[in-house]
Image (cartoon, rainbow, N blue to C red; front, side):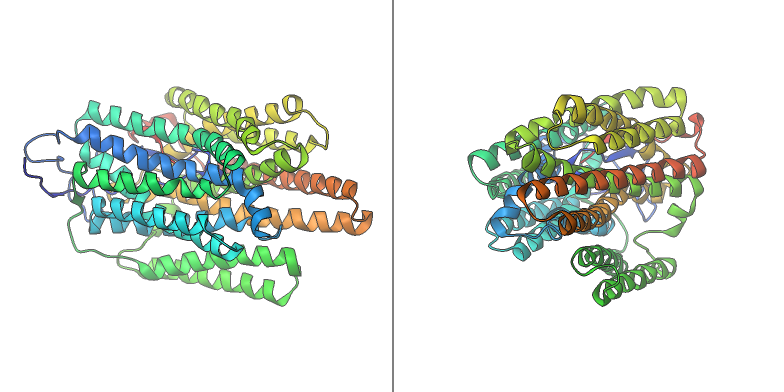
Length: 525
């Protein structure tokens, strides 16, 4: 049968969760329209695509790669830092370079996929991700690794929205679409856990570099398979890309993170730190002005100015800030303080992944009964308590008594919060803004994670330096200094979570009836 290129108009933009945990959630409205307002059409004019399940398998593999990439690199980070002589202040760039590029370019990537062709964007994103992974695997210095991670994030910002859009336009019948999203969600939900174990295995028995090299065969084989089984689709209308908006928001966030990093080396009052923070404010203000005046803005202000939706996005930002930083410091606590191997560290995080998957499924059942706000409040409160419990860890504390209870509380809390948070993002939104609104939950988590990791890594470095200055630099002093840095960072992670809780209490006004028409929750990486 001769293949056809299908013109569709679904506008969906997904993302990845902080720190490699599959925390991003997206709701697919029952009726979606594109940014140009035309109704969605069927996948083919002659009925469903006979290769649609093969296409789903290909898309799921790509999604799995994107999801596990963050967690696999997190486990390998202590080894990469030692190998490339990365400083304590700069180590966070391995994570934040990826999340900044991904979060800052995600909305633009979704629009590129819609208008340039989703299959084309999908294949191009896979090839780019493979090349970036190879560059990172061969990195000879810190800058090369940071650049490769940023390039991975940029490619993922095109690949991820193209993947979810392809699922949406390939499966047009209600039951089949639900099954397809169930498969997609299961892959996304389990991807982080797979990444933790794979990262431990590769780092321990091969090299941290293989945590990047492993993406190359997966991406290239998936790209070749996509050429034959995935159908092309694109949005109608004239292509419009808000490049100035993407440049200013990404540049502003980059300056902000770099300013936080410089503060760890030079202090908050240094000229370089101040100039970077001022540049960040100017660029982010310019972004707002551009979005208010642009004919086709990257981020329509009407989407975030609604009280409930805006509160959900702000809460998501603080949640991401607390969670990703926690993953960074727990990784180092496991490997450098408790002496865990990379593989054992991966298994130590497994209860966290299991807790989120379990609680997210539970939240989907509880949401119609209790409404979104109650679940968001309970979830963020549990996570805040769990983060506070982590402040009791020490040099010789046991995993079962000190770490495991915290992981359970944080993961269950986040699972309960993410489902309604995603649902709230679509309450009252116009159909042509549904893709942007859905993507913003994931975008804010990514950006919050990048900012929180950079800021708290600076807090950690400052605390450690202060401790060593007053207690000497013996091995015992360095060990206690690290514990002081971890616990102070966990306190601030809890503060971020409490800030999210306060925002939800003060701004979110969603009721049970409001979520009845927002669709079915889908886990995305």
